[in-house]
Length: 195
Image (tube, rainbow, N blue to C red; front, side):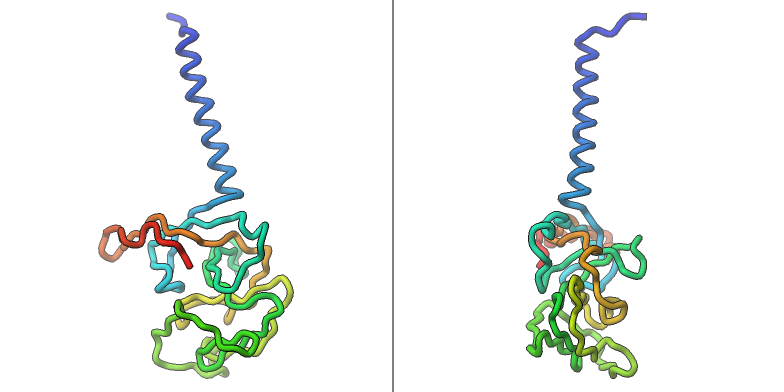
C-alpha cells in the first residue's frame, strides 16, 4: 500500500485544522456574541412576523442594561427550556399601569407606535389583566415585558416580571423570513433592523 506523501498529509492537516478552528469560532460566537432564533408565533406582530429568522446580540447587556423599547429574547419564566421574545415596557423601579389598553409608565402615557389591538372587545380587569393592569412598581433587577400584538400575547401581564438573569440578548436583525402560508420568502423583510 503506497504511503501518503508529506504534502498530502499537510493538506489534510490544514483542512482539519481549519474545520476545527471554524467550529470553535462558531461555538464561541453562538455562546457569547450572536445567536439566531426563529419567530414561531404572532405575539410580536407587526414588528416580527411568524417565520422571521432573527439575530440576537448576546453580549450587549454585559455593558449596558436593557432599555425601554428593546426587543429581547429571554428564557420563559414558566418553562426555561423555551425562549420568548417580547418588548421591554417598564424598567426596575418604574411604576406601571394599564388603563383601558393604554400603558402608563411613571404616570405618563407611553408612546407605542409598534403596538396593535386587533380584538375590538375590551376585557375588564376582573376578567383578565390584558386591558387593565396595576398599578405596580417593578422590583429591582426585574422588567415588565409585553408583545406588540397586545390582544394575543402571553407576557408579563399574565406570568409576572422578568428577572434580568433570564435575558438571552437583544434582537437586532431579520436575516431571513419565510411565509409558510404562501410558501415563499419575504424578500423585503430580509436585512431589516429590529426596533
